[in-house]
Length: 405
Image (cartoon, rainbow, N blue to C red; front, side, top):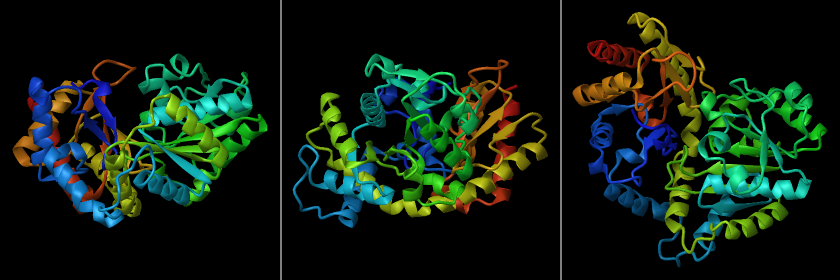
């Protein structure tokens, strides 16, 4: 089974992917097998950058560059040129005064939270225990930035207004991950989000949105990006999650906050000499993927319902599709089998039928042994799938699961 930290938190379609910079593919036959199966599959629910060769990715970047900029212009140096253009584009999309490009979202959020700690005089950050900094950053908020975290709730959802209002400890910043990926890409309703933000304001706390996947939240909230971003004092967005970029993120907010963030970006080592490939890929992704996201979210509901029907019809016994109606274009599927059994079945299905229904599977972090989950991402490749296609793929998948018992 793949290690949990082998995942990328999205690419072109925002789903589990395999890092290729972690070592030579040939040194890990199972990894090479996975990549080969995904690349060669005729049908997938999401086709992500790892499905393409290095040459294909470079060709795609070269092909797309003229659609977003003049390829004959000078390359960026320390954040000017195409990078500055991207920053202006993000500020415009989110309706904020300014935005700053960062090489990683981890750095962008650490800088944002550090800036707010200095401005509020309180280094305590309230966030969910399943939020990205708590699960995927190796304690960086405390180790690098000297911040302390507290958890208003441990329920697998974002905190409620009452939980924020009644929380016993003071905090300077409330960080909300939208959607909360490790709880199943879940979101509150728009009214619940407004109430949570208002409760934080009552406590004189600032609000920061971990909006790595903010792009696909508009359908659930029924609001456009500027109205969503306006609830927070700062927002981070990712360029490789959902949009299929190479890397990079942006921190958006007031002009004074962004200017301060640029100083800390330099101190953290994020003032890179040139970043035009990442900036170009981000601009291409904004043009190509952003307009399509509502259709992905709508199709995710079709796929999720069909998966549940397929498991029921095939007599799978216990299973869970979570949320039953996805809040974004991503959701979880849970089954009572070891992760290596499910992953082998998924690979064999892709190799033998050309249909890659699922990708990586992971053992549940808690609960009884032998329960595993996968993350499903629905993107452009899934738009051609009917509910009947999904149900048929489920039957083929479970057939291969049974063969390993």
